[in-house]
Picture 1: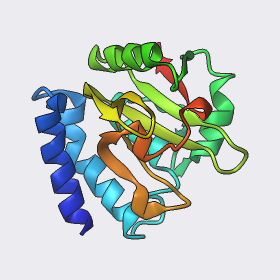
Picture 2 (picture 1 turned 135 degrees about the horizontal axis):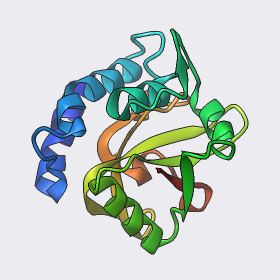
Picture 3 (picture 1 turned 60 degrees about the horizontal axis):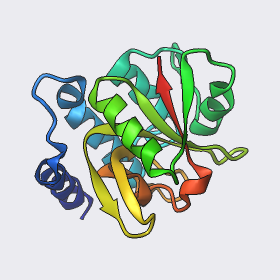
Length: 179
C-alpha cells in the first residue's frame, strides 16, 4: 500500500506541476527521500523517523548543524535550536497565503525552507519541496509540497504532498528559510 502511495505521490507531484528539474538536489535525492519515508512508515530503520529532518537537511543541502558523527538531533531538538541559529530566518506563519507563496518561491529558487511545529518533545519538521502550490481544503489555501516524517503516526509520513498532510493547524506552523 505504501509503495503504491509513494509511486502515486510521485506521479501526482509531476502532474501537479511539481516536476523537479533534472539534476537538482531534489531529483538526485528523490529515491533516498522516498526510501526514508517508506522505512519510517513501515517501522524499518532505527533512525528513519526520529532523525529524518536532520539527515535530510544534510543529504539535500549539506547542512551539518544537526548531525555530529552518528548522532543526529530529533525534530523537536532542531526546532528548539532554530531561534539560536543565525542561518535560519523565520518567514512567517503557514496560515498566511502570502507567506506560503513566499516560501514556495524561495524553495523553487534553491533555498532550503522548512515548516516547523514546535512542541516540547513532539516537534514536527517538514522540508518544503519545489513545485507549484496545491489546493488544500482543510487549510482553505494553496500549500507547498513537502517531505517529512511523523513520530506519532509513522504511516502518515509523506513525500510530495501538501503541508496540510503533516500539519493539521496552519496557525501552529512557522516557515523558516536558510540564508
